[in-house]
Length: 242
Image 1 (tube, one colour):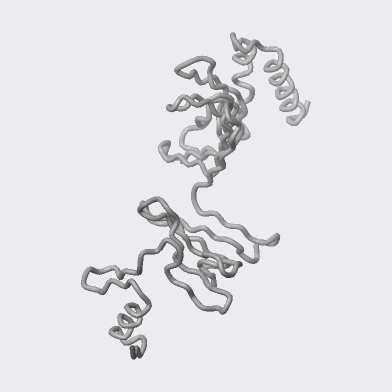
Image 2 (image 1 turned 180 degrees about the horizontal axis):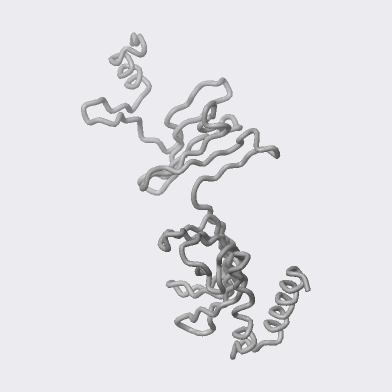
């Protein structure tokens, strides 16, 4: 019997066990917990029961490189890369989520990463998708980068570049007349920071803005275009003649 036939037979057996098993007792599911932990070829597949603080349990299935039924390494000292499905995780806030994660554990046994997570709330059915790390969208041949979201130092937002980093446009808005950059104001309202109008003029400080201020307390506070022109004149950037 070939390896493929054996694996398929194990999968069918596990699926049948899960279908006929009892949701309350989990007997058949427990029997299917160790479907295939295969140190010989490096891949593992299995289900595992993670008890919640309140029943029912969160049954999971993991499949991937060097991953056993619970997602831990089959062979110590070897990285783990696996796909895991969670049926009923009870969150600290009391919500019950169904989840899917792409997960990685380093060979050091302590490094843990989740590059991709999908969540659906069992109650309100709202989906979430979380991407961790660098996110790149390229063309079909991977020759041209379309979007490149680059990791930033801890505590800072990521930087999104349109195109390859060497010749990228950091921010591009394909609209005219409406605000290109917006930010939440201190009062909770939306402040329009900058946009280009129908005459291709750059509008700085649109709706909601209370003025423009330079970063240092020793620099002037700008509340009008005249103030801005005067400040730029002091810096030698324009010749302002009121």
